Length: 336
Image 1 (cartoon, rainbow, N blue to C red):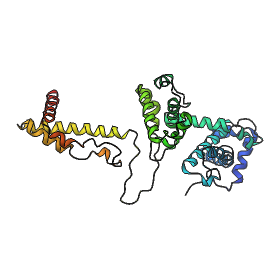
Image 2: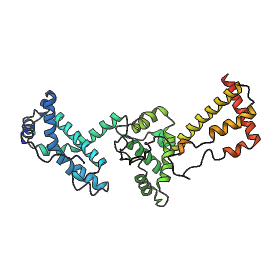
Image 3: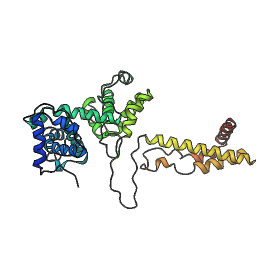
Image 4: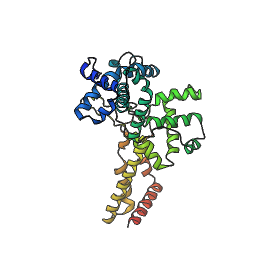
């Protein structure tokens, strides 16, 4: 059940909030309040603030996002839109309790005048707490690395913005569908602007950003890792694939490297027993690499090449076997 603000107000605490604001003592009272008193003031402020935020900010933004249902009422906000709404309300409440130091005779009008500043400041503080850039700007070295291409530099800024927000793209890392539409509007390449093409563009941008590893870790990887993946109901007996922050091919490469290390270890053990290298290498390689690579098991068939498809055929070629033997012996001698 989606939580929504209560529509029934408690006149006593709301009236108290108005009296303190009218006297110009609201911020001081909030700063000196006990936890219980602070909770009362916050609750009262929330009851006054949320209808203003929804009417003045949320409804307009949901229309711009193409979410007509979310623009009908708070009760119909989708989960991610509801999160944004609560974030904005919280920011405005905090602003009210911190800055109402002068007499406020028209509380709703005072709040309305500060809406944009309060929500923008709250947005920046939340980004900072995640480790993202508070005011995303594209560094000159990134723009240079992208050849100042209009679409790629726009995408780079979108990436820096995206990593600092709480919403996710479902089970994907990036909102590729939305960015595909953005790409089409900039490049006018309507037919070629697909999520697959945008994935390639994202890889291009990230490759440039990774040229400065410390910067990339601080402003892309760390805030991206702070995102909370959506939790979906899973039917009994089924599992879901966790949100991966690396390309699937990277996972395959890592697993292949581990398998190679296992193979060298096994060869070393059998060589120590006095077995002949040319007799054991093919057997060990086939045993270690003959199964499926776990990194590809969560991917639909034919979406990527099978990295182990030609193992059996390769081991039938003596030149290949001899090369593997030579390589394994070289690695083992280097360990010694």
